[in-house]
Length: 118
Image 1 (cartoon, rainbow, N blue to C red):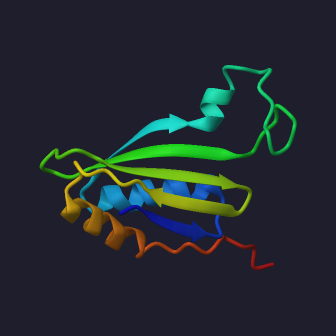
Image 2: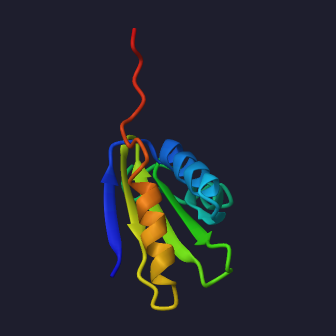
Image 3: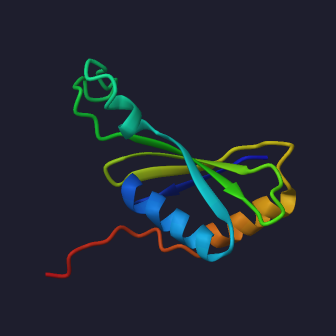
């Protein structure tokens, strides 16, 4: 079963937080896709949400491996501005312990957006 975790945080902030937290917990994290980088290759691509080529949407795929090098857990992070959805994709080849350990690490994150305390 896959999971969806909605968060109030910019995609760029949450991607960094997730990768740092999972690496600190002993996982290997590889980024396999980044929409912002991919869209730079096609300047004529217009965002379906904004109708412009200057899109701030983000889709990133992270592959999370355990020390035993079992098949990875796939995290898809999709967001725009300060809205994000973390999707843990269902893959029967992924070790259930890996999924449980990653979920435990994710729920230790502070998903609140940073604000200025002026």
